Image 1 (cartoon, one colour):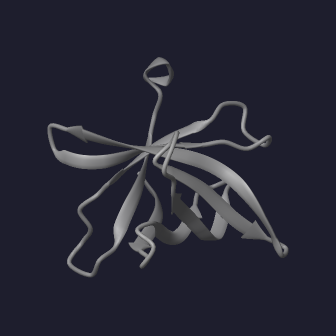
Image 2 (image 1 turned 90 degrees about the vertical axis):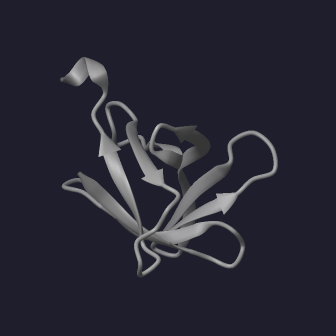
Length: 104
């Protein structure tokens, strides 16, 4: 299920929104990091910026992608998602929710 859409920004990161049944964030930014995680995710809410997750760049059978972990005190468990690093023809990257294997 697609829970977010993003476009690439000039700084090498991504900017967009996340919309799910319980989480609606606009102005979500994937900020490139030099050490540790590849990207830190932040969002703005009521004029304050807060961290909402992290992403690691990986390669797999279907190409390069970001493994994303969204976390918040509102969640019982973190949300796992992936974003392929090949955008649509319009330059849009889709963030897809991945169900944990023990939830199936």
